[in-house]
Length: 358
Image (cartoon, rainbow, N blue to C red; front, top):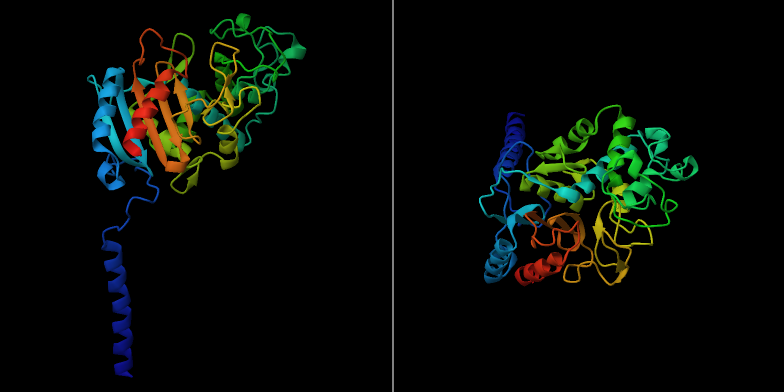
């Protein structure tokens, strides 16, 4: 009996010791699993260009190009790990910069969170949340406009003025019949605020920003509120997007809504989702015009790429097929043409990136 008890005790101790050793064994992860940076620890896992088989000399040429194009910061992440992180012209890791219209995707995501919490429905008319008379349109035309039309740039409101005040929100076409890039999207912030019974920034901070460890703030710009943050915060949002609204084990944004956001939201401009730009479609339109162009938005970029794009070339590129996120912040690549969103810079930049990663 004593012998049996000794053997049993030895077996238990063996299991315990093996378990302890296992827990203390360094990770054998080769970087192919998804990584989420800590919300509290400044450390961030990295992956070297060499380990990925990327071209180091091409990376040097890419950095020279970024400097030439007035870039302040640039990051490439694979599976959430930093492969390149560069700061130029006195910018630094903790310095903030404006997202410009790339921040529209933050509004789209926050709207989706409010919907999944049952606070609103994007298919309901905007006047249900803001009251009738939020535009200067006839009531029957105003009541055609849903939050989904604001998400897809198809409100039909006249885009002759960028300033979103009631007297400028006049009728041009029935909602859903015309695609036009317009700052009226910001009315979604009012919809979320009304539905959640708190100001938009408070709701955004609680439901999205703090959950993924972003810094940053909304600042009243000349035309609409603009989000400012450091570059790593932009990268965090990119990782959330790469994982279809999931952060670690929490589905922050419903995957179904996220998939809607990053697929063609209408047929007029199939290269546009819910305030996200989409690559690889048969045709596209650009801000400020009604011209329809044939082909892909950014021919040199992967066809499955979707992107947050803002004036002066603020960018988050998300490439699911490569588990990659690319971030660029800075001044306009071409000071003479600050542009609203899409520019020739995207195609040139992707030519340089491809030389590194292929």
